[in-house]
Length: 140
Image 1 (tube, rainbow, N blue to C red):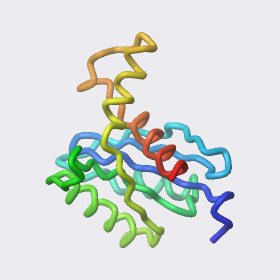
Image 2: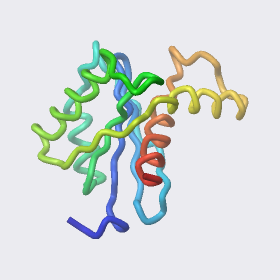
Image 3: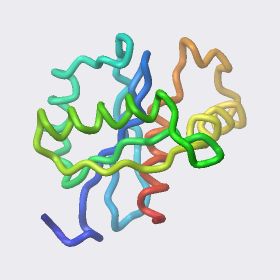
């Protein structure tokens, strides 16, 4: 494993309909959106995830953990953890969970501030939320 500062990290914003993906270098402390993967009740196209992992070859994968504001866990936390465990089990990549409480909310704000579509059902912000998860991880 490379030195922490030079690691390439891939972030996933897990959702039941879409999973956002971003990558970044720890040294730069920022990331870029790379994919929005459709999911059926939280189950992604694993082939698409495998392709992204092969293309980007991350040293570490982080998955957003949507904790409640009072630090308690909810049903989506359990599902996000399960997704993280599956990533580790299938692809043998190190996986860490990252508090992502406000990332989707923040990503929607960024899109609206830039004059983008407010139809988040059709035009997801999950890839942007994945960038924010990545940046949260880098700041920890």
